[in-house]
Amino acid sequence: MSPLGETLRSARLAKGITLEDAERVTRIPRKYLEALELEDYGRLPAPVYARGFLRSYSGYLGLDPGELLPFFPVGHVEEPQLDPLPEVQQPRTWNMSGVIAIGVVAGLILLVVGLYSIGREDSSSSFVAQTGTTTQRTPSVVTGAGGPAAGGGAAAAELQDLVGQSVETAVGMVQSTGASYVLVGVARGDVASNTVVDQGTAAGTRIGPGDTVTIFFRR
Image (cartoon, rainbow, N blue to C red; front, top):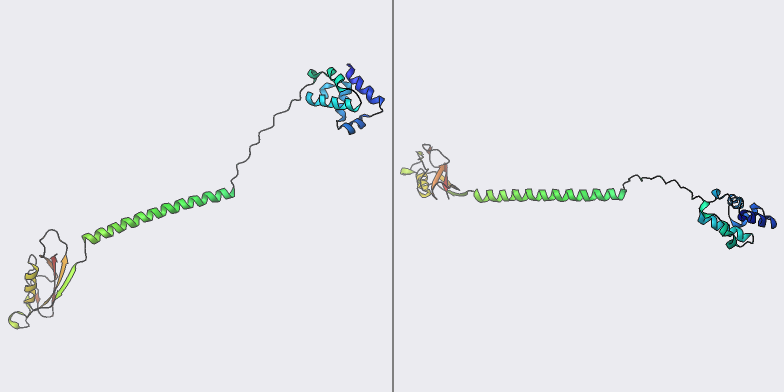
């Protein structure tokens, strides 16, 4: 045994100090004090702590730590082997506020997409409506009273075929029977303007005062 352990033990006994007293004053666990006196270095902690214990204990006993440290076999003190801490994987949790924020953003995106789609449909419908209004305008309607019946009487006369006649000629032919007429202008691109394209009363029908003939003509 080196002088280290015996010097510590002799100094403690000379002062009448027990290991319990030394532990209470120095705050060094008794097992480490015993290990220093017995030179049981395997029971000591890491060298940096063991050397600190030796300094405190020797100073408490009135000894010079500098004289005892050279006898401290630093290399004989085994470093404590600490087991690596197990990896703790934190469970993935969703923050409620984050979930609400994601839901709000998704709702806004759906709302914008919906409004955009509705806007496109309205634009398309408006375009179709405008196109239809341009190509199929509401027919212009003109009414006229009948003229005096042929021969001045009230007898009915057969309506002639008006299709292909000019509006003026067709009106005259209807008025000659004493019947009234209604002119309806339509859009027809295959005939000349101001030409009758159809008639509401078939040709050969007997008409007279009180009757009305609808004449469809190309505007």
